[in-house]
Image (cartoon, rainbow, N blue to C red; front, side):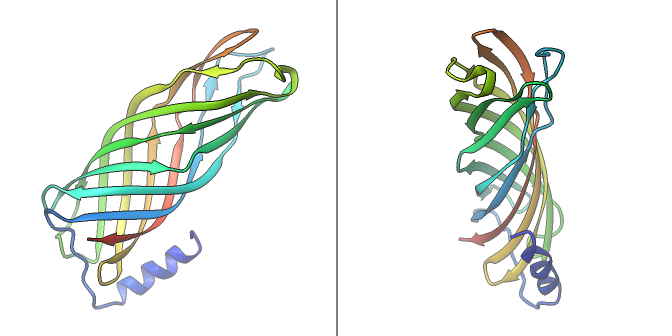
Length: 202
């Protein structure tokens, strides 16, 4: 998907087809989303928790309230991350879903071939299927769900009638308490999420 996106962008700029983001339009974007945690936490044996990246299918649904303002809902298939420390290795595996709602502002005219946009809103992250690994194998690991702010930047580029390519970058404020048999760790995950997708306007 990431490799095809530049080709789509170049094709769009050379195309005479014009995309419209008009008031009342509904459009969906589907593609690959990569969650990249920027974590910090209480220390375990002198080390903070390290949470790896994961890529899943991302989906957004947008309603254009006006030609410039839209409301977007983000959904995805569950993300799964390995949690480790430098001294203990892998200590847990967690899964989560990060549904988010964004208010968006689109720059340019509604019929522009290229529509950059920014957004701000709220994220609710649901953790599940937590499992202890390594030194925590067989012990209970639980993460509190998180509610926080979210922000995004993105761009839509026309490729054909009603079709467009999209690239977007999200920031999510995700704070949670990690409960284990040896204590509770306050953890900030605060990931950046990059999504490359194809969209269709209804």
